Length: 362
Image (tube, rainbow, N blue to C red; front, side):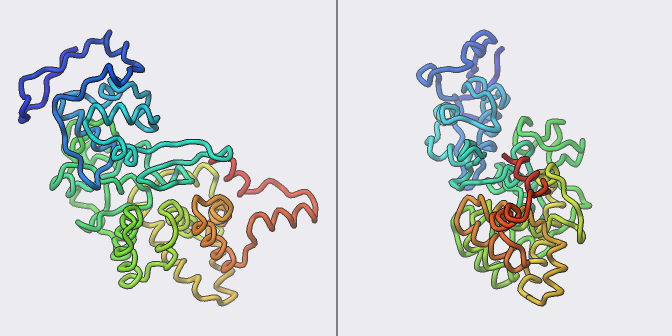
């Protein structure tokens, strides 16, 4: 297989020769057998790791799966430390820069833990792993994918005040990381916004700016959102994973008494669906400040309590657990451990929704 390098580079005309046999032989190559890619791409400070690799593969005239094959990576969704070191060597960037911008997973106390952007994540639903979401206006201006777009609870772009897009407006398919380049869908059409797109509310935009601030450990956008749009004060203290799971627990149910299956609890919503979850979650967080008994009981029917219970027990940071416990207390609900202790004293407990949810993410 002979692959031409992209035009417009200083190495235009050079060719990268990759035979099928040699590609297979490099299934698990040693770093000293690799050569850096001919065309270097400069990374952006707030760029997604997968987006950067997609730009590098396009600049060098190879598809991202072929680049992954050269690096010996079995998957681009979850990479090992050795995979990331190989990609860093191929692309000429510091390994520490790339490692923090690619998602990894491991087991901690027999449960999955994930890492992204220097943060720990306890729920797979907090991250967009399978499909991408993008801001077409950002891609048109700067042609790279921003790191915060891979966080589920960030469904809008505060810069352009628009919703993110997770499907091609031309072919309707979910955006794949295996597309030709960041601004082109797998169908070959440029990703441009539909004229019928919905504009997010000021509160959604403030929430997304605050989430970006938390990811970057910058408190200014969080404090600004608290002042201008009355975002909940706990947003300044919890981790991005904690914020994602709290807003999901508060806003996932559309009506009182709605049932949520364990499978639905970990589904990745579209940006529009996620914006609706955030809107409801913020409204219910406001209502929780009113401690009238009748309002508390009504709110309890609107909150996905198993999500709060799980976070209170297994949040990745102490602030996440503490906030979940405080919200449970405001709802008049006991923490899970106390409830189970009471069940043991009073008889054999039945297997309920929370236990099913625990099993689904273990």
